[in-house]
Image (tube, rainbow, N blue to C red; front, side, top):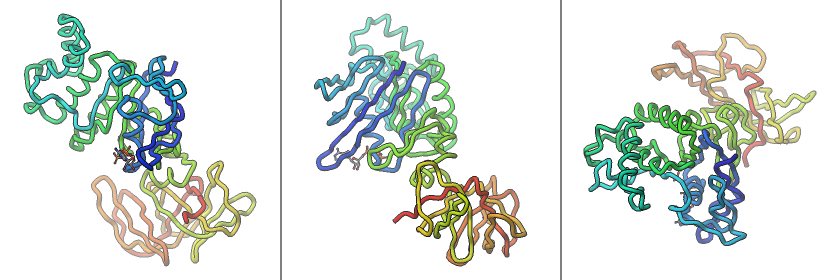
Length: 356
Ligand SMILES: Nc1ncnc2c1ncn2[C@@H]1O[C@H](COP(=O)(O)OP(=O)(O)OP(=O)(O)O)[C@@H](O)[C@H]1O
């Protein structure tokens, strides 16, 4: 069963059509990441699921119950939606202790005092916070505050947890750890989680399903591997990863698409559903890590000048150029400047019509 069904959600803010018919489903033990550039509608979509924004059209079902249905004028408030919410700022009450922060939502729902004590203790223990119950938020590190915010969202035992940029206030090291333990916790508790992020590494590391949004629409969704390795459109190809783009003109011979510039020709694949005609402007896009540097010419190689090798700690980045072309590649050794050939493996080169 799907714990969350979001169907054809439209949202207008003034003249702006912020969500343009967004649909997806999620089930327990699954993390869905809403990924996209600033202003793509991620937070608005999350807030409509939480009941903090009212869509103009669509349906939302949480744990088998309808919480919003524009065709029936049905709209349940956030507290009746059986969801846990984690905000970017954590939004902890500064004048309440950790235990009181976690207990607050249960007490306003009229839960029995002894039951509150039991649930708060259990939750704090689960997240390794039991020794901090009497502290105030200002006496906690950022990572501890984040755990308290998650504890507070989970203490109601919701089936669905919604998180808005939950890691953005942590430093890089803590963020990496948090990606791992939050995902583990979600799977252990068999929750269904929806998370907003603009950080693609975070989305790829944490999610089972990534929804890439652009202008209030989902441009592609899929597993991290699928969306990274098999983009179906130019936007997805360019949004994810670190890429080289070569602009030229398309020729298709024996079904093999090739993009050519003044001094180079590169064959690749046109993703399913993409079409472009012979002679039209096209771009070849390839992930930087797929490029290889050679000392001789060969198939799908371009003669370039290696202008510089830049040391980046765990690898070297090579800056390459040819007339009208600049490229990047990576390797494990420093290379001297000079003439080289860079190979763009044909299976890893995606060909799309050139952006106008
Ligand atoms: N209260 C509002 N009134 C008018 N427009 C709004 C309002 N809130 C958001 N918007 C607009 O809606 C669009 C989507 O905003 P939203 O915050 O959902 O994007 P986002 O993808 O979460 O961006 P970010 O990553 O910057 O938080 C943006 O164009 C934004 O300017």
